[in-house]
Image (cartoon, rainbow, N blue to C red; front, side, top):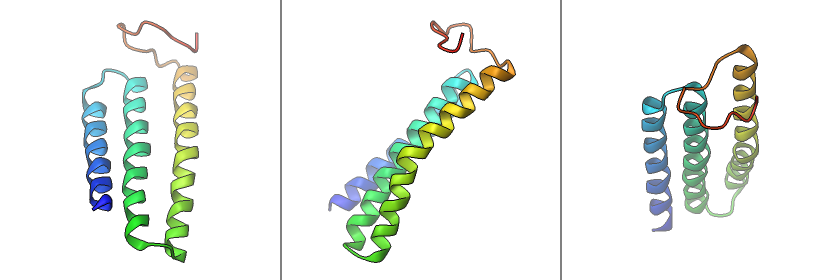
Length: 101
C-alpha cells in the first residue's frame, strides 16, 4: 500500500512541476519548477520501486540512482541558472530579488 501512495505522490509532483514549467514567465522560475518536480517526483517514485523490490541488488542500484538524483540535480540546476545569468538572460520584470547581481 505504501508503494502506491509513493507512486501517486511522485506522479502528482511531476504533473504539478510540468504545469509550472508551462505557466511560469522566465527561465529561472521554469528551471526551479523543473528541478523541484524532477527531484521530488523521481525520489518518490524510486522509493516506491525500492519498497516493491525489497532488499535485493536491484534495489541497492535504485537507491544509488536515488542518491545521485538527490545530490546532482540541484547542482546542475544551479549551474544552468548561473550560466543563463552570465549569458545575459534577464529575469522577468516582477522578480523582486536578483541574487546574482
